[in-house]
Amino acid sequence: MTSFAVDHVIDSIHPQCGGPSQSVPALCEGLSGCDVKIVLHSRDFGRYRSHEVRCQLISVRDAARGRFGVNPQILHVHAIWNPCSSFAMRATRRRGVPYVVSPRGMLHPDRISSFKKVLWRWMLESENLRNATVIHVTSRAELETVQACGWELPPIAVIPNAVQSFGRLPNDGRVAADAPPQIACIGRVAPIKQMDVLIRTMPAVIQRFPGARLRIIGPDESNLVGAYKSLCRELGIVDAVEFTGELDRQGIADKILQSHLVVMPSRSENFGMAAAEAMSLAVPVVLSSGVGIAADANRAGAALVVDPKPDLLAAAIGDLLSSAERRKQMGRAASNFIQSEFSVESVAQRMKSVYEWVLFGGAPPECVVRS
Image 1 (spheres, rainbow, N blue to C red):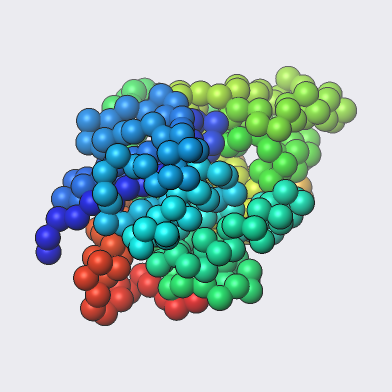
Image 2 (cartoon, rainbow, N blue to C red):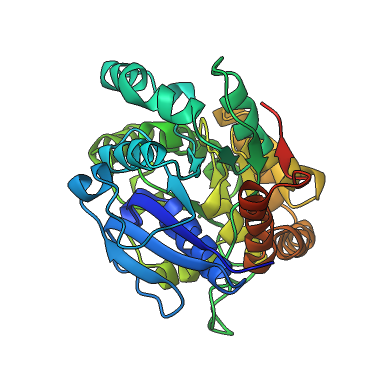
């Protein structure tokens, strides 16, 4: 099959943007290694630098005029509800170039309920989505969310995020099995992450496991840390909960290895990138049923999955903290699960097959379902 060019557009890959700041560059690097000519456009690259992927700053005006610097055969847009992505899709459609849309969880009801987004939806985004060539989702859970929108949509490709290796890690960085229990929660501090639910879980955990500590890792996106610290004072657990703020990827890896388990109590996650990264390091995880990767991880024996309620979370956390052997077994299953299903090479090949189908026709790849 001949080589071809695909331009990717995302408003920002600053670390504060969460999972897409890792998954989109990983996908682009993997595709570049599959002989696809990739240019990644963004208004903000944060700390990201790459030798494999050509990166190009783009303004909203450039996006609206379809000025991507090259003539891509496909445009792939990540995340919606922002002018850069929306105008890029409209300009590309007018030029007759096919485009793929990855909503990145933005079609969940929690993410489209504001008046501004409802207005934007009817003015621009619904047309962009209906006229896309393919919509890409990262899990079966996100597929169900997209299908529930009630719109007439194009074919949908279910391809998970790629999980990159953390590279060199300290040999002695992993927490001792008999050390005081360390629990981590990783992600933007935002209402949808429900970190307050996990904080309310801690008194029961501490009662059963004295000395247990919770570390919340991530930027304070919604100015909630002050309120969460007040909640800790109210519950009498100020000394047991730490807020680290934003860390770089290596810093996050270090904190994961210093934890006995990672908890993700989110109301909704289209994938659950932080949990997947913890699993890649063989650290067991407790996931809410709203996390996109949860059902598959549970079937693989790689995670415990519960509804995000304090009593249920406390029971699941207690089950893992009470058995070092069970944590070890689940960590091993988690690592195998990530390596077998979410390698950069495997995910990139699946996405390349979708691009080839769009450009050259033939039978749709197995990952494509009709909406």
